[in-house]
Length: 223
Ligand SMILES: Nc1ncnc2c1ncn2[C@@H]1O[C@H](COP(=O)(O)OP(=O)(O)O)[C@@H](O)[C@H]1O
Ligand SMILES: [Mg+2]
Image 1 (tube, rainbow, N blue to C red):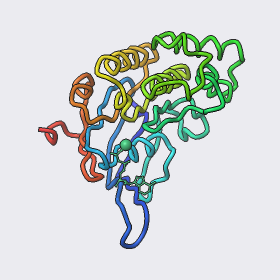
Image 2: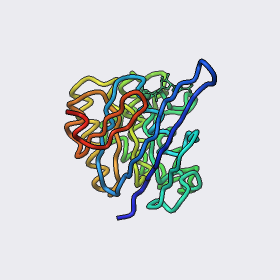
Image 3: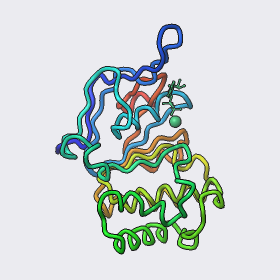
Image 4: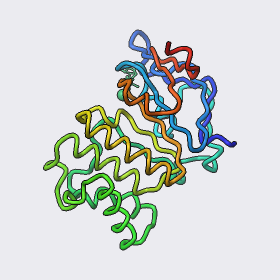
C-alpha cells in the first residue's frame, strides 16, 4: 500500500546557538491509508511539531518527507489533510457555520453544498444549534468540537488531530473521538491523534511514543 505520508531522518530545530531547541529529531515513519495512530508523549516532547511537519505546515530543518499517497505536495491540495489544531483556531469574525464552511468555499465548493456539508458535520457532533453563534460565545470544549466539525466537512484523506480531547471532559472527549473515528471510517481516512491520555491512545490501533523529540514507532518502546 502506498503511504499517505512518509519521512526519514526528519528533524526540526527552533532557535540558534544556546537557545537551540530540537523539537523533532531523526523521525522515521509511514502513515498508511485507513490506519489509526496515537502519538503519545508528555508536553514539550514534539507532538505538535511532528503533526505540523506531517501536515506540510512546518518546514523540516533536515531530512526527507513526502506524501506519495496524496499525490505529492499537500499544500497544492490542502483539503486532503485535515488538521485539528491544539490552539484555538476559529476565525473570530465568522459565526460557527461560516467557520466550518470556509475551507470548502476556499477549495471551490459551491455555496449550497458547502453549507449543507457544514451543517451535517456540525449535526454529527451535536453542535447543530451553535451555527449562528460567534466563537467568543463558545466554551473551549465547544470551540474544539467545531474545529473537529470543520475538518470532517472537508472530507480529508488524512486527519491530524492535536490533543483534540485535551480541553473536554471525559464523556464529551469520548464522544468527539467516536464521531471522528466513525467519520474517518466513512471517508476511508487515516487518523493520527496526539494525546497524553492513555484512555484515548487505547482506542487507536497503533501507538507511537514521542520523548524529547524522538519518535519511536515500535510498540515495545511504550512498555
Ligand atoms: N515556534 C517555536 N519556537 C521555539 N520553540 C518551539 C516552537 N514550537 C515548539 N517549540 C519547542 O519545541 C519543543 C516541542 O514542542 P511541541 O512540538 O509543541 O511539543 P508538544 O506538542 O509535545 O507539547 C518544545 O521544547 C517547545 O518549546
Ligand atoms: Mg502540542
